Amino acid sequence: MNRLSLFQNLPDKINCRIEDLSALLESEIGKPVSFSLANNLSFQGVVSSVASKFDNTLLSVVIRSTN
Image (cartoon, rainbow, N blue to C red; front, side, top):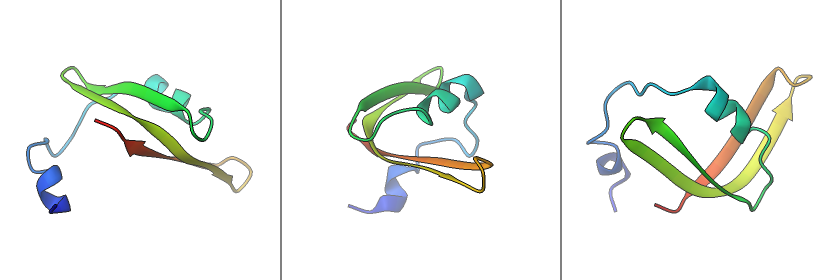
């Protein structure tokens, strides 16, 4: 599978709600999550990792897609 082709049909910029993404940073590893990236784009997956660095000024979450 060509990874570049996975994103070909997506727009260059996707509007999303900060509140939805912020909630993901509080997710637990191994838990399923789902959220909307845009009005017609739904994302579902399982949390692979959550990290916090530099006194919580840098936060990240990795989600493995299931859809």
